[in-house]
Image (cartoon, rainbow, N blue to C red; front, side, top):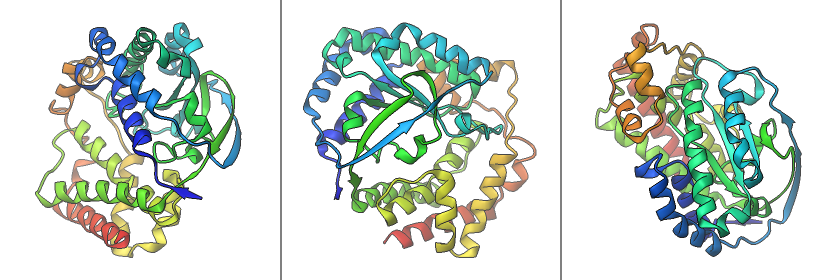
Length: 329
């Protein structure tokens, strides 16, 4: 059975993501305390119907030696009782890391946290502070936590993070087993998401916008590489991982259009970012001022990548985005 996410579900998850990842007043306890009652109320208004399908997942603990990820785990210890689990997914979980890799992590909060606004603020503050370990791992990290709740496992929100992406996840801290109830998101909702993201990319490229530093380039390429995911989900009505989406979507696109996705994948494999001490300080600092400054700081694009970023390259990106939109129509 396919159902569109309810308005309360969409509102709650949007509110929660912004709250935990900082919003405009990133890193300030005063702001988090002032907003905690609003987040708690949004949680109380969000009462999902239990999903009809049940999936049981068993994960292994993260046993890697990365000092930043292990530091992140230890930093989260004081709030461990308020977390169901923290899952690493993507390349940090499956071991296929490259210089492009950042930290993809889902934190699942226990429901009791939302009934104590002051406790919610303290948990959110700890999670906000913890982002400094992500920035130590990758100074160009352009996203924060994926955030869900214990309640979400009774009606898993596929549109937030496809469940298939968690099958090979590693537990950083918390429970290693979960019984998750799912109900399919409607293809129409996936299509709306896909059209919104595709139209955004078309608008940027069409008006001649070009990334001017490494942060902007990586953020834009990451957004562009999600187009096959959005397309496959809109077509199938089911969640899909990035790796699988490339395999599934490739045959639906013209050869001329798809070649730019191969180029982007090659950039990802050859990615290198070695900032000088000042740029490194700016990019690794978690405070809101520095996060805004990172978007404009003149950190040069690698000399091995710059020659690829020609006028034809961006024209090919625009062609791919337009073909994506045509296939979605």
